Length: 259
Ligand code: URA
Image (spheres, rainbow, N blue to C red):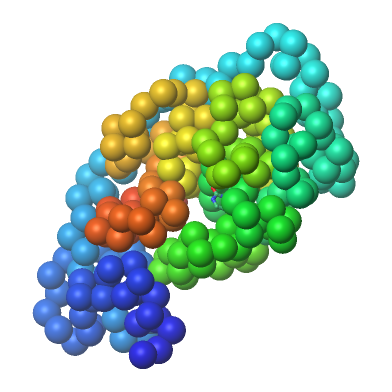
């Protein structure tokens, strides 16, 4: 089995692909993954129909005035200063329980920004987001849409420190940490944000919504298109949902192409 087949199998897509010389079943071919195959996932056509539906989300999470005041200085920081600030941050309880901060990784001028929830054990040990099992799946999801970590892609998390026992970060921890990501986004100026999972989606969109209600819509994060999909860790636990994640990725690619 070659690498591409392995990726497609991992994403539960393999039976959905056919050779190019077979009759076309769909007009849209957003994500060819190789010279001899193209997707026949009908959803790519469906999502195209809704691609024009930009959902005007409310402003991102509003912080208390005190936090906004404390974070005001971030807007002047460049990459080295921002990295230093995150490294030295002790503003919430998470720092005391983690090994190191996990800033983010990738192309600092990336078109694509993928945002997860927070570091897990592997990320805490290595200082890089999505390097464990969920990270391997994320890399394969990127590969399926012809993207690669570090090449036009930046990967970051909502919180920079590992929550104890991988618990969901608390609202105040998110509120403290989010300005760092907001500054990263200002510096990167991505053309598309992919929020991975409910926590990242709600934090960026300032919502408290189900992932199901957020999927399949083109959201707006401060003028940047944002799509929502499942967190890779959830997909590892629920592989039957991988096809829906594929729909979401196709939607993101289509949305980029339509710009
Ligand atoms: N899960 C996340 O949300 N982020 C990581 O970096 C790793 C796992």
